Every structure is written in C-alpha cells, then in structure tokens.
Image (cartoon, rainbow, N blue to C red):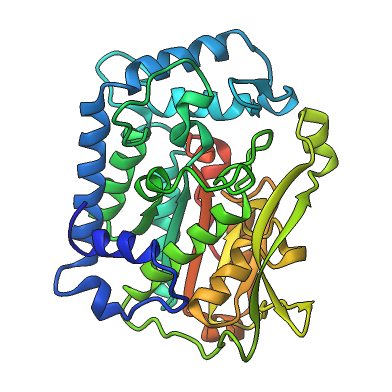
Length: 369
C-alpha cells in the first residue's frame, strides 16, 4: 500500500471520530492516479499469492452442483454457516472469460449491459449537474474469508477479487472515484469477539462493525474530493455513541433461504437514551443502495447513520432492496430541478455480487432539468 490511499487505510483504523482534511489525505498527487496504483498493487499481490485459481475452481464445483435460478435457490452450507449461491456464481463469472482469447468479464466491455459502461455514464450525468460520485464497492464474505467457504489455505492471505481491482483501475482511468475495501477488510477481518466480525454467518450482509468500517473509510475518501465540506454534527452534543448488543432479525425472504437470528454488537447513535436519525431528504450528501445501506437502522448502526457520524452531517438516502444497480438511479433521476441545486455528492454503495453484466446495468438517462 502506498501514497494517499495507504494513509487513508491507516487513519481508518484509528479511533478518531473526525476524518482528516482533504489535504491530509491527498497531498499533491492526483487521487485517480493513487486509486489506480493501489488497485494495481493489490491485483498483483492477489495474483502472486496463487490462491485465486484454485479457489475459483472450488467455487465452480459448488456452482455446478446447484443448477437453477439463483433467486429461487436457498443458501448453501459452507464450512462456517451458509452462503448465497449467487455470490459464488458472480465471482466465478466475473473472473472468467466468455470465450478463449477474450479478457475476464470484469474488463470485457464488449459484453452488453456491462457494469462499467453504466457506472461511467452515471458519473458523467452527475458531473454535468455539478454532482460528485463516489462508488463504494462492498467485498463479499467469500473474498475475505475463503477458508470459511471451501477447503483452502490462507497462509499469507492478501484478499481475493483481482478482477475487481482491474475494474477499479479502468474506472480510475475514466475519472470515476471508486473505493475498494478489500485490503482494509482483510486487515480487519478478525474481531475480538465472535459477535464482532465483519460478516454475518448465515446471511449476505455485514455486521454493524463491518458497516461502521465502511462508513469510516467512505468519509475519509469523501474528504479527498475537492470542495467536500464536513458538517457541524458533534458527538457529545448532538449524539452519543453507545456500544450495544442485540439480535439481528432477518426478513422473511432471507429466513426462507436459511438466514437465522444472529447476535451482533454495534455502535448505536443515541441522544438522552433514544436512537437518533440523521437523514434529511434535502441534504447535500446522498446515499444510494439496497438493504446494505440501512440494515440495523433501528439501532442507528447502519451505514447511513455511521456515515452521518463520520462526516458530521445529515444524509439523504435512496434505497431499493434488490435494486442497487438500477432502481436507485431511476429514483435519483426523478428528483426535481430544485433538489439538484442542493445536491453535492452521491455515494453509491454496490456489493461485488452485483458486478456482473445484466439488464440491471443498462444505461439510464436522467430527465433533463
């Protein structure tokens, strides 16, 4: 790790509430060059570890044993808990080629409805309206804990997902801010307590500690965007951070697939003993995503609440369960002209499981102002 992104990852591990200024993060180098360099270095480290080919082959064996429509299949048992078969399929597809002589799907832009084209197009549409975009890519449990999925050795483990790092390199070359969390998650993958891990054991979501880590890293990256302004919310005045143990209750759809109640621990935001909510439909900072962005909102341990904490400002949120790729773009595009005048930054949270060519990644023109 090097440059500003190394500093970012180091500072994320500190316990401070306030991220540093943009100057402290970026120094004099172009942030896209730093993003590119960090992604290239991680991709090279993953390739050098030699783990990815055997891991991908092991995943493919599991995928081949579970044919059928992904959305209708139950979660499959792994070495620790359960995992969605869709995550296995997405990983193997993203890292494979459609035909001999072609690049991995992750960087094969000739494929129709490739995520790359939609993301770059969305970034350009926002820029034309004076709005900055930060794409936050959530790694999956299988990329951070392959030893819990299949029988592989993780000696010298640096992470998995080299194709995603190549994808980030190409986004960098097109001026798209993209935050890959793989390296940071690998460094922080083991918590002190069983209930303090980054991922749930029987569910595709993160634990509160995972979303807190994502929010802190996101706030640091936002600080590197020219013109991004920190808000005025203050811990001790507007809220208190109170660690709390509680049970995660999966919804009916996840329960049908095999998810179960799991104990978790999270940093709740409270004022006078009551949970506080720092969402505002008129806020300059907007978060787009699916269930990942508001899970645990009843305890203010969700990504949006923690992002408000680390950026010290209220946050607007457009959420669409199952629609992080397309439905949130449609929702944003329906905002009226007056709302666009107050919007400054969009944080788009996307799980790596979604990063495969599909109709949901078609370009979506936003209405003219």
